[in-house]
Length: 197
Image (cartoon, rainbow, N blue to C red; front, side, top):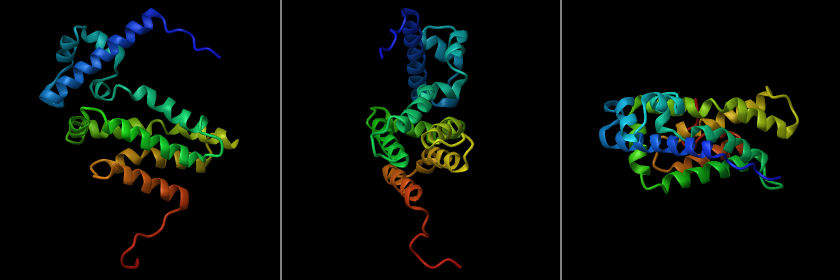
């Protein structure tokens, strides 16, 4: 099946959207998130404020400009996994690959600091991930031929989508991803240490 060609209008919209996101990130990294306004971003991208809002729902969305692709990528990780690969392993690989691509970005350190030092961005990031729970849960349910509100599928989706929040601020983010997926795959075990009371 061939993919329909992207129209010139859609290409132009994508270029404008990326220019706005790039300008916003440059300004946020240089001046701090709270000291940059939408007008500043519009001026830097050479567009109107109305154009900024046509492409982004608000200031936080400018930082996470690739969010619209996240749900599609999560669902594809489930539906397009290799033969014999479990849903949990497919999602584990997706999160590890995503972490690698983020960490390899030249502005990864500055971006991470921006998000972790700005309460509004931390909260937005958590909401951003968890709002994909219904779509991911439905995709998982489809793989097993059960209703979209199946508790096990919904719970797996929700736990998986909390991984970025659990990894935030920790040195070994890859270890966090592996650790959470080990729990999801094998079940929870008490941590080593003194016995629970």
